Each structure stands twice: as structure tokens, then as C-alpha cells.
Length: 575
Ligand code: KIV
Ligand code: ZN
Image (tube, rainbow, N blue to C red; front, side, top):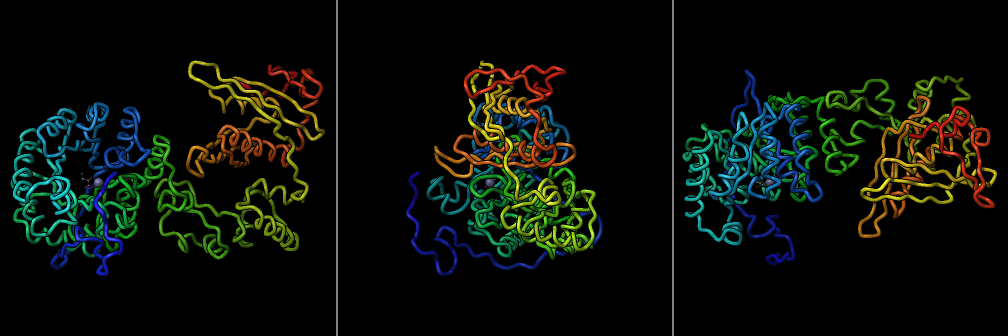
């Protein structure tokens, strides 16, 4: 996209470029509410701004499912979309408005009659509809995007907020790029919007330029300079370009804002929006400081985050606060020791308060004796100090080679056979047939420890399911698949795909991982590494010879019948 040239060096005053520079006169903080319930409204825009994240688009069914989950989570307002943007968006907003009960359902509109009427059409069936009208106010947007004078912005704001208000009692107005707008002009536009009937005034930090102290000053400034500001709820909408969206939202709340616009997992344009789970848990965990409540059910945060990942395929970074896989995981020995004594030493929230089952003490090269001993005990082992010490040394040397030590590795350590570990089955090759309207089918060739190659075939619900079934039939190991995910670990058309698989077998968890440019290949290898772990460490070598009915198809390839019969337990996993 063509864009205006930017200065090569950052402004020494830290103002970026001229478009950014606005001076906000300081105002005192409003008094904190010391009594009664002081509540901040949670306006979830995952379905609108969140969906503007590259890769986050959702179909109508997914949007309704997520909207229902947001209602169950306790969101006060759900911005369900931008109805004029497309027929699909319109229908999704209308479906949410018609089916999801509880929260206010908002639809976004520019200051155009067509936008406002379309938004109203989409939301009018909601029990509590809201039209959210926006118009940019900053100089750079006025001059380059809108090509509008200030007077025209003021006139349009008044006219279109009024139009929206004629249709709907609940109207929100956003002066887009408010944080880079001259405060005096911003105050003028906000006042006009309130006079025209806006019931919520949202102050967006559209490009994530604000910093907490300054953004709080802007809110205080508006509270002092806009006549009638008390007739509207002050809202904030912060983007995360400098990683400050949550901090800015919290600072604004301290300054008097009472609605936060945010998204699950912080998804949204560019670096995203204020993360709902983070901002809510910050206010809850530091209630002593903020003295503010929300209506969010903490225990639903993690499940809602997972649902969004499932619906969009957008993974959450492991170290993301609240909902990342490592948010309640501890690896350092000193931390694990503290956790075993009292979880509050290293955790400021209880995992169950955000819907995570429990904290995890990850066994790796930084772990200490305490955590290792506790894990052994949890697995039902107890050893004298000398054996424990020797096992701990073996564990440390294994941990130097492996990122994470799983229960199956510990079993292998105890059996003293880590060094002897050899994969039982070796992948010789596989073929998978996929396609719309076709039966999915796969055949797999595995080499056994005696060097013979066996082939098995299976049909399944997709190429990967078919391959897994063929492997189950061939090896006789049927494990319960608990988690299967594929991530791209590089970009471009020859991107590497990483498959991660977690299965449960005989009450224990086994994990496998493999990387390949072909995701089916990565999946097959990850699955086989799990099956090998089970075969070698727990069951011992699978006696496929006793179980199978081999049929020679060539000199060195035997096929095992795929029919499950009482005499053929190797086929147990089929179906
Ligand atoms: O970031 C922004 O300014 C917006 C507005 C439409 C509220 O998303
Ligand atoms: Zn936004």
C-alpha cells in the first residue's frame, strides 16, 4: 500500500512524527469510589475489531457460538460486527442479535446514513441493541483520510449521532484516533456527540500511541472540559502497538472511564486490542488498588480463550498472561520449591480462578530435587535418598538433552533403560488419499525391530485420521488422543509444519512432536514417536507376530489384515 513518507529518525522528543504530537493539560485524579459497587463495563469487540486480525475471520456459526460464550462469560456489551462491511457481516450480527440473550448487542457504523440504517437493521431484534458510530478527529485523519475541516467533523457528528438516536436509544460515539487529536477539538466533538444523544463516549487510542499517564490525563481532561460528560459513560478502546493497551485502559479506568473495549486473547488490528482476560484479571487481582468490579466470570476466561483459538486457528503465545500455556507453569528449581511450600510464593492468581485446571511444575533442566521427588511421589514411587540422588543425576543429564521431561521419561529413568531406547517401529513410508467427496484412505509401511516391513491400510474421517488408524492397526497400540495440533514454524510456501500430539495410555500422558514441510508427514512421525514411547517404555515390544495375520505382497512387505476379530487384537484400534 502507498503511504506518506515517514521521518527516518524518531523525533528526539519521542513524538514519532508531527501527526502524533498533542499536548494534554494536566488535571487532578477524580476521587476513588470508596463505598458501594463501582463497576466497569466490559465491551467485547472480538467479533468486530478482533475479527479484523489477519487470519481471524469467522463464519456465521462460529460467530454465534463465540457470542454465546461471551454472554456466558459475562460481557456487558458484544460488538458483533460492522454490518455495512459485507452481507456476511450483516447476517452474522443479525444472527447474534436474534439469538444471544443478556448483553447489549452493538453494530458498528461510520457517519453515513446507509451505515447507520444497516447497523440498525442488523441489531434491531436484540433485546438491548446499540449503534456504535465513529468518525476520525485527529489532524492526520482529517487532512489525509477524510479531507474534512474541523467544522465539517463537528456537523457530521451531530447529525449522524442524532440519526442513530432516532433509531436506537443506546448510541455510542467514537472519535477515531482520539489520542492524537488536539484535546480542545476532541472535547468540542465529544460535547456535540453527547448533545446529539450519545449515551457512551468511547475514546480510542486507535494506533496504540498513548502511554498510561498521558492517556489518563486525556480522560481527566475530558471529564473537566466537556459540559454534560456525566450524561455519558466514558469508554476506552486501546490498541497494542506499543504493548500498552492493557496499561492504558487501566490508567483510563483510574481516571474515570467506566467501559473498556477489549478482545479475547487481545486479537485485533495489527498488534491487537486490549486483552479482555488481562484487563479483567488486573482489576480483580489488584482490587486493593482499583476498587472496581466487572461482571466477568473468571473461571470462563480460559475456556473462552480456547474456544476462540479453536474457531480461528490463531494460537495464543505460550507466555501470554492469564491464558498462555506457561502462565501457570514453573520450571526453575527455586520457584518449584516455593510452589510446593505455598503456591502464593510464585503465583498471584489461582489457576482455577481463570479456568485453568492446575499449575504445572515442568520438569526440565532448571528443575530441582524437590519437584523431581514430588513428581516421583505423584507417580506412586518412593525411593531412599541414595537412589533418589542417582535418579536425579540421570534426570539432569536427560534434561540437558530434552526440552521437557514427561512421565514416560521418568518411568524409563526408573527402569534404567533411557540409554537403550530405540524406536520400536520405523516409518518406511505412507500414502494418504484426501479430497472432497472422496473416501479418505491411507496405507502405512513400518519396519519392525527385526527389519521386516509391514503394511496396513485404513479409512478414516480425513487423511490424518486414516493414517493414525492404520498405525494403530499395525502396531496394536490404541491410545486415547487428547490433543493434536499443527503449527507453522516458518513462513512461505515451503513453510515447516510442526505437529504436536498428546495421548493418554494406561493413565499416563505421552507426547510426540515432529517437524516436516508436509503436515501429514509431521503428524505421522509425531504419532509414531508417541506409539514408540508406549511400546518401548510401558508395554514392552508389541507382539505383532502373534496378533497379526501376515499376507505377503512382495518379497519384503507383509500386510496385516485390517479386520478386527477376536483372534486379531492388532486391529483393535480400528474404527
Ligand atoms: O481503533 C479504533 O479507533 C476503532 C474505532 C472504530 C472504535 O476500532
Ligand atoms: Zn480499534
